[in-house]
Amino acid sequence: MSSKSSGGALRLVLGDQLAASLSALRDLDPAADTVLMAEVMEEATYVRHHKQKIALTFAAMRARAEALRAEGVTVRYVSIDDPDNSGSIAGEIGRAIDAVSPARVVRTASGEWRLEALLTAFEQTQRLPFEVREDDRFLCSRADFTQWAEGRKGLTMEWFYRMMRQRTDLLMDGDQPAGGVWNLDHDNRHGPAKGLRPPTNPRTPPSAATKAVLAQVAARFEGHFGSLEAFAWATTPQEAQAEFDWFLDHALPGFGQWQDTMMSGETWMWHAGISTSLHLGLLDPLAVCRAAEGRWRDGRAPLNAVEGFIRQIIGWREFVRGVYWLKMPEYGLRNALEADRALPWFYWSGETDMACVADVVDQVREHAYAHHIQRLMVTGNLAMLLGVAPAEINDWYMVVFADAYEWVELPNTHGMATFADGGIVGSKPYAASGAYINRMSNYCRGCRYDVKGRLQDDACPFNALYWDFLDRHEARLAASGRLLMPYKTLSRMDPEERRRIRAKAEATRQAMGAVPREA
Ligand code: DLZ
Ligand code: SF4
Image 1: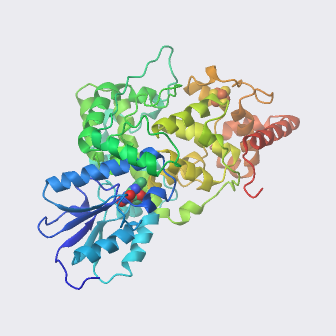
Image 2 (image 1 turned 60 degrees about the vertical axis):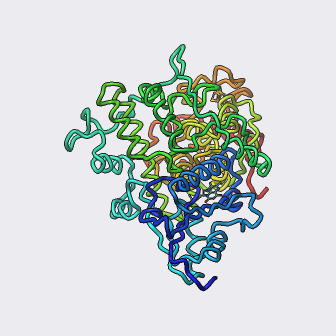
Image 3 (image 1 turned 180 degrees about the horizontal axis):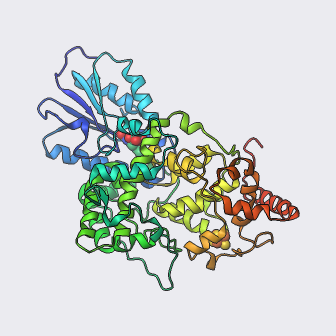
């Protein structure tokens, strides 16, 4: 390290810390400080992210660096092609310390446990002071979540959500929920009506700067999953705001009613598609909720749509982040259902006759996106019913989605979709047979499988797998009381029928390549 200090602070801005309000940049002195941003192989490859996720991150980082420079801030920006690039965030902090000789380093806490552990270990080897600030882009701090969770028997999202409604005063009339009910989810579970047409979402065509990043990513990350062709993500706050404004006008009014609906070939439906922008810091969570609330108060969107939208952000998004930091690192190792199978190859290739799964895989390859029910009830549900090992499921979710960060992915997948956490996030597994997918989508009409069949050759694979799943986990799940109806049906089944279901399910797993991982 050079002995002469510049006297200023070195301020680290990670790839998903692009908000103007970032805590690490508060009190920044443009005359003395240097902002460090670095595109590094370690972050681009710790999982083999979808090419679009890497391109989005780099394009958004570069745009942020330009915006800071335009404000007169000194930015040390290390691009992925820089021959001196050390390949890691810690390495780049080290190089910047040598080059700039700051008096101290200031950073906002990382979103992921993995990177926070790496940076903390690095800091312990250094002599100058490091200041790590809270990521206050979230509305509930880690300390507040811990306090909320303390002494509770279980962590129920609904109670957390109500507390957050009161705290933010969103959709409140005094101390009562607007409209008299906290949660209107029961109005939001419609399957596709005949002739239903989603609005055409224009998304964001790539700018010249983004196109340059796309070319670089195509060359350097060729072996990663996914196509770059349909890249249409917002990379700046302005683009993100334009996408969100489109959502408010054209999709929010139908968002409630159709938020669980799935339609073949339809990616965005009535969803906002703003998760990447929220996670990167291009949009502010409270501001988007207030804008949505305004639409209801002006009579331009129904309450079930607005309440559903706000619940996703101040309820689920904050809740899963709280659970993640409360429970890590032990959380990631849980495997409550002792699932040990390999993930079928068609999760990557899309080569399956299951129309629902093929549609979702094709969609994620092209758009790095699927909506919550596609993730939960198609790919998540199937992986859970097959008994796929949590590590393989989590890896797939981290790879294929542009909005996947471990703090949000792990509780959603490990907790909600596959029950690997044993009931911390969800009180029961979201297991479903083909009947659910048939009710909520138009997939089954175009599928070679018979959604009503159970044992014959062309029976929908979800069906035998569903009953076999309940059968295999009866000791653990029947007692909970949350799956009373299906266990009643199972108990009335002829033992011979149960045996056939088990055999059919195992043959299905073998045919799909969902074999024990040791084999
Ligand atoms: C996701 C990502 C990628 C692909 N690349 C970078 C990078 O090159 N430099 C960087 O600072 N951040 C990157 N990120 C985001 C980080 O992985 C993210 O900050 C951590 O996972 C914590 O959420
Ligand atoms: Fe999916 Fe089964 Fe419907 Fe085919 S029949 S689309 S496999 S749920």
